[in-house]
Image (cartoon, rainbow, N blue to C red):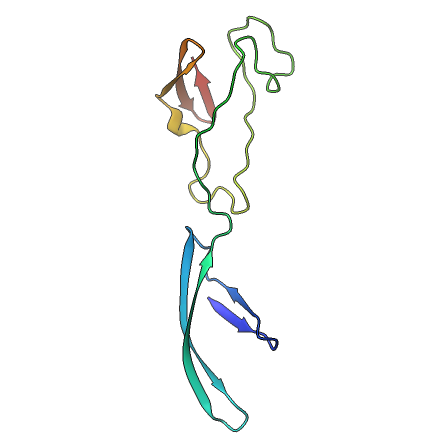
Length: 129
């Protein structure tokens, strides 16, 4: 990376690549020269902290067996199939090189009320049966 020290003593640092993870240590050496050519060299070090480090967690939702309010514009009471779009946000850093996917739910199951629901993933579609 590169560092630019301003006349007021503040500085700007530009990393060569995005910070991946919680913290990136930065160490270096600098040399200053005064008006008559005298020099002094010293070391410096600091850490760059990723402001948008994602954290995992558990998400839960309540689903009414008669419809998914907000996901279906006109749910039909008693219908067995529902579809909709699940929105979300990944923060300022974006989804990264791994992207964002529910594919990890494939082959798993959960309980809704008293019913066991099995999840399958294909393409961009998550199906619960």
